[in-house]
Length: 154
Image 1 (tube, helix red, strand yellow):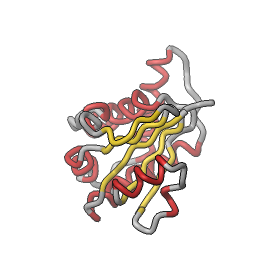
Image 2 (cartoon, rainbow, N blue to C red; image 1 turned 90 degrees about the vertical axis):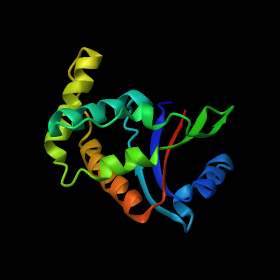
Image 3 (cartoon, rainbow, N blue to C red; image 1 turned 120 degrees about the vertical axis):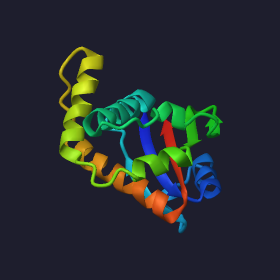
Image 4 (cartoon, helix red, strand yellow; image 1 turned 45 degrees about the horizontal axis):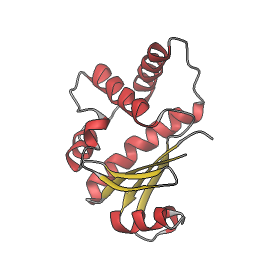
């Protein structure tokens, strides 16, 4: 079974508790957003490659996604499930990039993932939609001053 790569925005404690208890955090009244970036991508490296694509396309210097998760682990259990708090400074930095052009960032992201895999990747069109939704979620998280959580499981 491939790993899931999900992001939730809202109350960190409530989201962690829901994940821990096998509940759907999207049903919580204080969860303000959700994006699923699974689509058979490796959990951390694919998001780091997305950050690299944003950096290349917009000539920015965002820190890696892996750095944004340092010291942010809120849950790791024996069922291969993890919940990490994304650093609020990383969220602010990404949210501060106004009008990120999804099409060229997506194309660059696919190019970088293909380079890493050593073969052309043909991702689902759903991934491009999810990329736009992810960028919107990061902006919403920053604007509403709530937590952004990265949840993955096998």
